Length: 127
Image 1 (cartoon, rainbow, N blue to C red):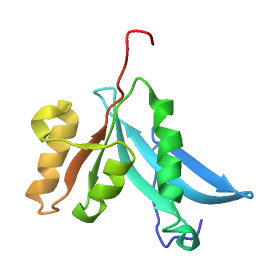
Image 2: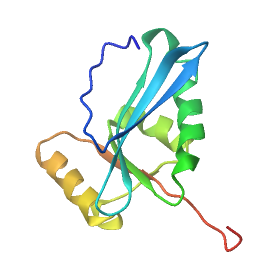
Image 3: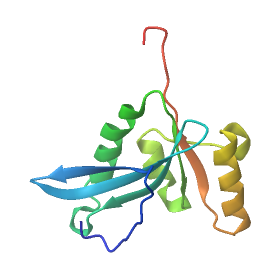
Image 4: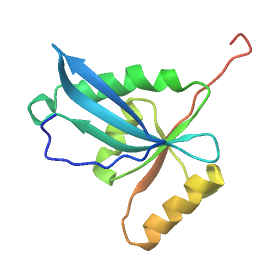
């Protein structure tokens, strides 16, 4: 996939792709955490497919596959609206599993300025 971005994956990472006409146009890397949740570490879209709703559609189809696991990410402020539109919510480090909260605090201490967001699966008694 041509997006100008290189990622090294660990052996436990889960990588998912979204294809169109046999070409990978989007990919996401999720890292399982000790708290039994995922950290969305990378979301990439091919350069020629950006601003066409590809990432929104990809996440909307991908995230329900993780029931019952919740998914968290650290994002730049300009991406907040995008992630809210696909179902993520803002959280403080005290509201999330400890391992996620500790990572976020560490990032803040490094002056990264990232926002902590999470996709939380809502359940009903019928499921």
